[in-house]
Each structure stands twice: as C-alpha cells, then as structure tokens.
Image 1 (cartoon, one colour):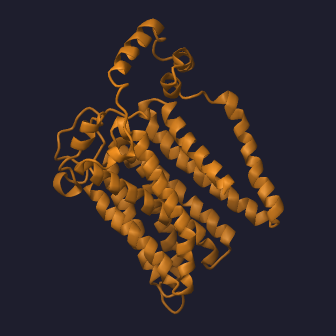
Image 2 (cartoon, one colour):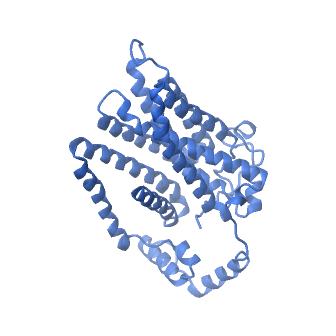
Image 3 (cartoon, rainbow, N blue to C red):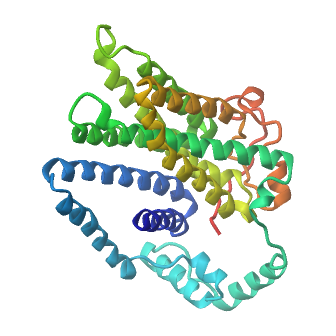
Length: 358
C-alpha cells in the first residue's frame, strides 16, 4: 500500500510538472508522450517478468528503475508557477530566463516590472479561495464535473481491467501484457495527429464508444466452436487501443473544461475517481467465477455509457478557456455534439487560449 501510494503521488506530480515546464503549444504533445512512456514501462514489466521468474529478484529489478529518478534533482527545474505561488519570485524568473537562453527565443524578463505587475494582479484575487464543493454548486459546472468524473472512472476501469485480465486469456500472460501495452503506441499517435483537428469531445466519445462496443462483442463470443473465436484477442486488443486513446485525451480535456480557479481541484477529483475504479478492477475480475462474461460486460457497459454521455460535454478546441467560477458556469452552455456538431462548429470560434495548471 505504501509503494502504491508513493507511486501514485509521484505519477500525478510528474503529469502536472511536465505541463507547467513547457509552452502552451507543446502541452498536448507532452501530455500524450507521458502516456506513451507509461505504456513503454508496462512493456518493460512484461519483458522482465518473462525472463526473470523469481519474484524476489523481479521486485529488486523493478525497484532499481527508480534510481533513474535521482538525476531529476539536478536535471528537472521546479515549476516556475509553484515557485511564484510560494513567494520565491526571483527563482521563478531565473528558470524562465534560463529557458529563454537555451531556446534562444524571446527576451529576458524585466524583473522589477514583471514582479510589480504580477503583485498588483495577485492582490485582486488573493482574498478568494475555492474548494471541491464549488465544482458542484451550480448546475452547468456540476453536470460537467460529474460527466468528467465518470469519464475518468470508466477509462481507468477499462484500461486496468484489460491490463489485469491478460492472465485469464489464452496465451502467455507476459506476451499478452506486452502486446496490450504495444497497441497503445499507435493509439497515442492517432491522438497526437487528430486531437487539435477533430476536437477533444469527438475523439473522446468515438474512442470510448468503439472500445466499449469491442469489449461487449468479445464478452459474448463463445470461446470455442464459433468462427469468431479465433478473433477474440484481436477484438480485445482493438478495445485496448481505443480505451488507451480516450484515457490520454481525458487528461488534456479535463484541464480545459474546468475554470482556472478550480482546475487543480477538478483534475484531482477526476484522478481520485480513476484510482477508485482501478481499485475495484480486481474485485470485478473475481466475478468471472459466476460467469466469465460478467467482468468484460461491466467494463464494456460503463465505457459505453460514459462514451455516450461525453457527447454532451462542450468542445474546447479553438475556444477561450474559462478563468473565473462564473466563466466556468457559462462555458459550454448549449454546446453538445447534437446541437453544435461533433466539432462544435455551430458556435462562434474564439481565440484558443491554452490553460495553465497554476
């Protein structure tokens, strides 16, 4: 439990930091690449497990990979936004200046003027604080928050449900786990290529509906004596391809749906829902003792339901993002897949302002 708790904290911190250390135009790419590296780690787990069958040495090998993180102390800068929030303004500016010099783009920060301007802006908002209950106080924001939480829950349930079920499929579990992770890589490529072109809502709902449909089909194909039996694994792999893609999208999409004042809170609640479903996944897997179709049916049903409901979320691409609590309540009113089209073309496009995580 201690290891799992520590890993989850570290994983969430890395996700937030990589978005804060890059410019707005690179955040989508970096967010998806993080998922690809996660998949590569699962592939490495399968490789080590295949060649090292002694659990004692296997745990030592797995743990030794953490030694690579020691170099982060010197290689990775602290988040400038976090430093600024902690009052360490000069350190924050030093990091920005160093990035300007390395990239050879832009001008160095005028420290006195920048600190003066930001201090003036901070005074207007320092008396207001927001918490988790603010996500659910107003109707539109509450609806979006619940919808996003379900998406996190469903994606995590399907993702880990398939990953942990490889031992119950026909074939070498290590090879199957490796392939399960391998099929994620082309999924992330598709997301990178089309996320900003088709929009978040379209690709999220499409991937979840296709993935849920594939899992439902796989659940009810007889294991023997049916001409489709030999294709069960391929259908499951396709389902993993789709769910991995939608899971990658929800990270960026969630951040763009919540207003700035509640962004970290919203992402934290969504991540909590994902951890809850991940914890439930092994328990659902035990239901195969009653009927082998039950676990996959549950994964498929929840994924399909969430995929359909995600069509009611507003599109965020090419839209000005909400900043205040009032902006968050007004953002996306009347914007669904059925009222404005898959890409939200029915609404006036605004200048796209990428979100920060501060």
